[in-house]
Image (tube, rainbow, N blue to C red; front, side, top):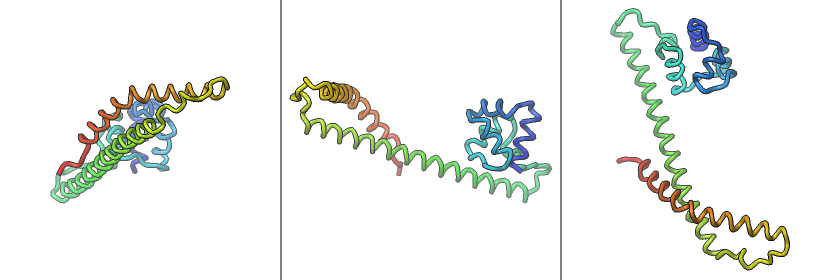
Length: 169
């Protein structure tokens, strides 16, 4: 039903698959798959589709509310509750993933600093008469130079991000 509704509403708005795809920042094949029922958009994308087609999500999903009966309102509220729970779960997972990626970034920066301190710029004592050694030494020096200048800024940002994305009790 969703696939038919997307196609019908898109056509009624006079949009091609390519025009809708451009509005949603996806490729045309994605729109085609949705309309053929080969795949289904996620909840965030469903909201974007409803905005692009200037219609409600419930219309896309096939809901037509004719009368406001108590049972109908109860069913709609239950569906909305499920959708809200899915949104909350998705947001929590994204936040937790981002939090752990920031922690991993902090740990990586500390580990690379430790390795650089342990190596003590050993490439400075190399014999640079060999072109391959000279290139390797220049690459190591360039990496070390760039890392020493950028890593503290990135580290501070990652630590701040880690504190901002931690789970609140």
